[in-house]
Structures are given as C-alpha cells and as structure tokens.
Length: 289
Image (cartoon, rainbow, N blue to C red; front, side, top):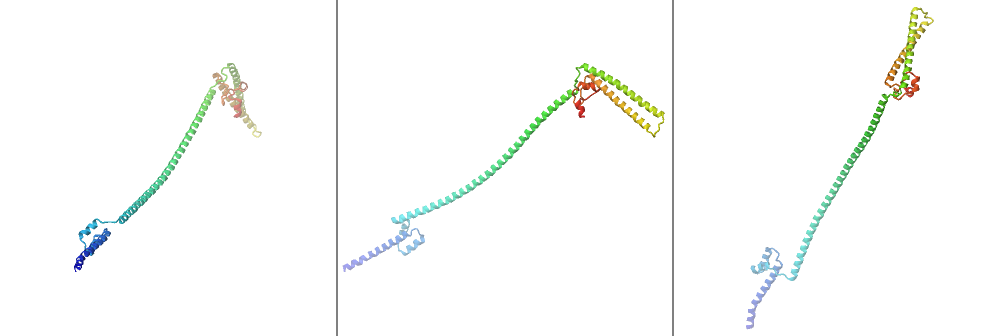
C-alpha cells in the first residue's frame, strides 16, 4: 500500500514535466516562427497554454542554433551580395548610358567641329583667292602704270624732240649758204613775176582780139581761143602761188629756219634746196605724199 501511495504522489510530477516539455516545444516553434506577425504568435499562444510573458520574452530574444545562425548569416550575405550586384548593375547601366551619351556628344561635337573646320577652310580659301586676285590686279595695275609712265616719257621725249625739230634752224650757222639761197630765190621770184606779167598780157590780148574780130563758129576757132586763154590764166595763178611760196622761203631765210622739212622737221639736203626753188619737204617725205 505504501508503494501505491508513492506512485500516486509522483504522477502529478510527470504531468508537470509533460507540460514543461510541451511548453518548451511550443517555445521552440515560436522561436522558429519569430519573424512572423503577431497574429501567428497569438494563435500559437491559444493552442499552447503558456503564459503571455514567456512568449513575449521568447519573441524578443530568440535563441538560435549555430547552424541557424550560419544560415542566417549566409542568407544575409547572399542578400547583401545580390543587392550590391543589383546596385553595381544599375550603376554600370547608368555609367554605360552616360558613356553612350558622352560618346554621342563627342561624335556630334566632332562632326560639328569638322563642319566648322571645313567652313573655316572654305572661308580662308575664298579669302586667299580674293587676296590673290587683288594682288594680281594690283600687280597688273602697277605694271600697266609703269608701261604708261614709259609711254608717257617716250611721248614727252618725242614731243620735245618734235618741238625742237619744229623750231630747229638747220642752216642758221651757214650764213653764206642762206645768202646764196636768198639770191637764187630773188632771181626766181623776178623771173616768175615776169612770166606772170607775160601770161596775163597774152590772155588780155586774146580777150581783146576775140571781142574785135568775128569768128566763124563752124571751124571752132573761138572755142580754141577761149581754152588757150584759160590755160594762160591758170598758169599765171600757179606762178602767183610760186611767188607766195618764194616770199615764205625768204621770210624763213630771215629767221634762219629755211631748209627744214615741214613733215619730218629734218634738214633738207643742200643740193635739193639749190635745185628746186622754193622747197619745203625732204625727198622721203615728198615721195610718201
């Protein structure tokens, strides 16, 4: 009997131990499900007759095994690595996008710079061509100006020489020759004047005879007489022109300019001056007229 009593007394202890084991098991379950929401914790608390204070304490300070800690650390590292990889990928994408934008900007800037260089080169080429043409025009103008100056100088020299020739006196120093020419001209003038008088007198006589006599128009004698009289008058007119020329030659002998050609202003040769009285052109100029 006493042994049965002891057994009956010890039974309550077993129940308590069973309860404690239940509470520990439930605590482990709670610890495993610690990251869950409060609602889950409340359900667990209802199923297990454990005090609220013990559940709260377990939730605040969960007890993890080394394997769980290692798994948690590994998971955290994996999450951190994935996050860092994601961040790196995002940064790499942003950097690649920025590099692409920078590359396009550089290419655009290079194209713009190339266009600008081409435009500048064309502008410089146009300016250089304009400058070259301007220099060429200036050079040609300078050459033409020099040629014009040479022509003007030559023309001035020619005019000065011509002026000197026009006022030259080729035989002014040979007074004996000029005096000889004067005597010859005076003699020629006297002979020419006598010829003029003879021609005029003959023409007048023929006119008187025509008025006094009656001519028979059938034989044409009156017409022949008129022609002869006209010829005598023309001859007298030519002789008067010769007298005028002799007077001009005498005046030139007085100022010393006689013997100068009126065309080329060169000196007429002395044989020509002696042979033809008067004469105002040289042989070459006379032949070219």
